[in-house]
Length: 498
Length: 96
Image (tube, one colour):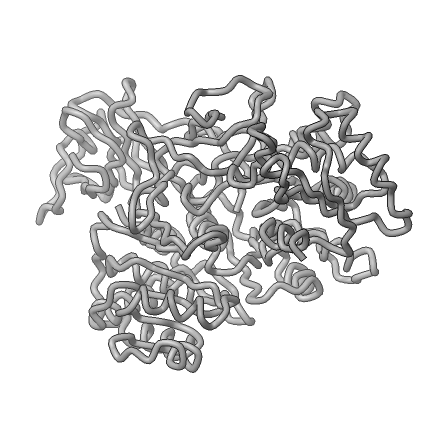
């Protein structure tokens, strides 16, 4: 199986339907397939081991993704926000490659003659020029479709691998072919090097939903594009949603009433933002998706009806689900396990394990799967009694105080109930007595006085055990998040070291 | 039959991709499907002429076989004479 099947089927069923819009240019499914076949010719001729993208979202990403698939070469979109030294190391690891995008930067960082470096425009032109004589048949797709470098928080970035079979299993298991109306359009504003940016292309094309690419997220541009193209669907990360809401509250005048489905994920969504969004878009369907690169995107989701039920609920358990990531997909098995691998009952925190055809759990260097195919996600979480999944940080973020394990999430959840606290982050701080102890960084809600540390400690002592009481408390203007809305705990740790 | 194998009907336009398969002959329109299209199409059996639908997944009762229709046609799918049915999948909200 080959992921190019997705585009082939779309082009077969609706060759003249517009599949992708970027910078005012419109691409039909027929145009995209023809360009992808041309790109595959160019990639085969270049005799390379990867096809890399160092660029913002554009049609070139879609053409390269399917072109690489047809040619049987892994597609490897790179994070253009990386510092030069980090990017140079990755470029070296993927040489020889076809590299599309920032030609000057690639040549400066990796002047290796074996790479074929093309600007976006030159790549698209070359693909179109080769299209007429290109082969119709693609590679069998036994191999790797996508290689994505993980963010590498503790060591050198790992090259996560997704096979054609993983991605196709995900799409066939979650999307009904051609299910979108001809007027449907999905606004995609996540970067092309993120798994959500790739799965958005695959899902939208398979459902025949027109893709509206916004190359660089900016709230006003997002609202303008949604309005101009009549976007019906959108995927956002929490920070994007917050900025869009702020812009609307400032009185952004564009009509985005066509928007009826908003999916979000990539980081923790603050409760007040999703509550506000549910009020602001009273008829829209909200979906919270949880997934990882190594799982071909979504493995669990909280659906539209569950959002509405939780939003208005008086039952605390139902209300709490707004902070969950919902239930596993029907095609996914999910368990919470302790450090010894023992499966834990509902209500207990542990590491999230998943299994399913879409789960690769594979890196270029090794597979992380257990002998019976389970992938330890290194995410910590717990299930409530009806199987709703709650995340509580990374398993590596666990604070070990005198041999007792504690999750930052449980402390942060308690702090979140305090009226004056807008955001908080608990991390391990060195302790002479205990090895590690709890440090919390707190952002005070605007208009509130800085709370008394003794009162906060009493709040935590009252709800949790005394071992959870922070040894150090810092008040900060804001917490560090990456562009996908992920809290950078290692940066918070540094605050305590200073 | 290996997952990913593409099979063509020998009596109509139908093409499928094998998602999974066990022991048995995969047929369309009453005739065995093949990896290559024959020069001339055979006759469509009236008993297997309900047609296939683009993008639908077809399964047998035991769940041993699963085929994805990648090109629709006039025949319908069967395994060793037993008709396949469309796989019911609860629609999921778009999550990406």
